Amino acid sequence: MPDMSASASLAMTHFVTLAKEVDENKVTPGVLGFIVFAAMALAVWALMKSMSKHMNKVDFKESPDDASGNGPAESPSGKASPAKG
Image (cartoon, rainbow, N blue to C red; front, side, top):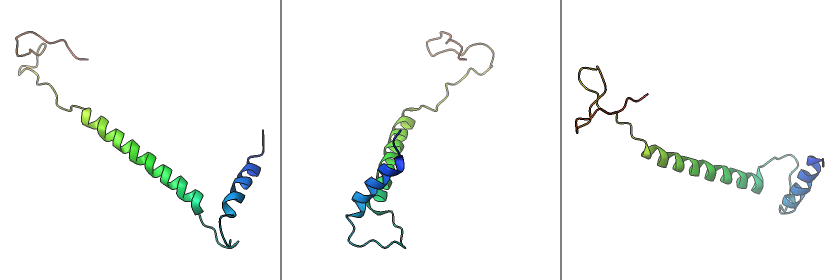
């Protein structure tokens, strides 16, 4: 298995060359940090939009039961509906 730190340092050298002057005493996220943060923000936005769409499809209204509570509930046509379980 190849050494992951070598490939990471190779990738970082490409980003470091984009900077004009690098201060060794200062640590910043840079362009790579912004790209990762933006990707995560887009993923959260897409997940929230999808969740909102699915929650709008949910019907929270319960079907009315008969007044006595004994036996199956009847539909408006007079036929008994199957028991839900």
